[in-house]
Image (cartoon, rainbow, N blue to C red; front, side, top):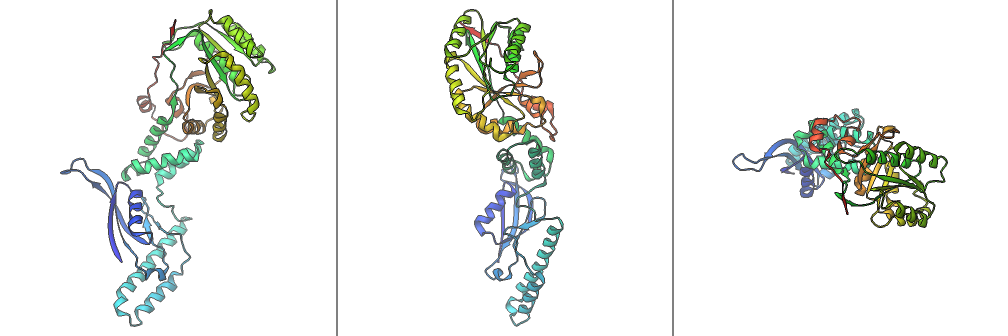
Length: 424
């Protein structure tokens, strides 16, 4: 047998290094945290050192699974578990040692002792219900369970877990607050925020599209209220509302109510030419035109294509934004994002945040598809119940995380300085 001592930045990297050098038939004796590199004690980094030995070809006849030690100190197998009759194997080894093979007696006794050790390990694992998964750490298990509780996708969760293994020291993994804070920071970094342009040419045309039932008409009214009243450092602007959703029961009456409350004109159009005419009619009178659309199922590609052709009347400078309900599961969000791609939407507006306590589905889907979020709505009040999207707003909505709001706000400050200016 051959003894070895290997060092690496973390447990997983060290274990992989051992496998590459010595294969899977190795036994881990111990591990410890160390300081690596540096000069005269300066600039050293945390690391892990693992000691063990390899088994020679004779060990194959013994059929005792080699063991390693997980970060939490519980040994586990490097190979798939086999059903081993430990007493029979031990007896066989002892008999071989007393049968005249004196040159191997010391080694055989050591192997017999190892059989006892492995048997104790197996009993301990069986008592706990199952063998501990390779490279598993209690903090990572807890983090994964918390992310699953929040409906993060499996791929997004795995990326965060792998990043923890690579970038957090062994001592850091033992402190769940460190693991959680880092995970929140990385989740926050994955949230892309849409920024308004600094200059717009009158009239600015903003179109809202999305599936049926996500609250587009209410959201249009909320946006209108923001622009009418002004928010942050932005000044109030003049605008009108146009809807092509005059066929849905109650849609026309709903839009008229909002228009009367805010004292802004509301128009209804049915086709490309009609929309182009109304836009031309208001272009010289208002700063902004808000366009509400018919809800479309992402599965009905033909109807989506027809609506896209109608909206082409808004011109190439029109901004399209996609409304999505926070209650939509992650896989459906991804499909909606894909099906509405032909509209070249600039951002996503998340609606109905008040109807769910889960946000991982939204964060995962937007991050994996590289989409930006501009606004969040969390109620039915008009005006009100709408705000510009912020990382803080997403993170404080996560369940099971101890979110330190002051720290998050420092890491991801909210920008209230946006001031729209108009080109002549």
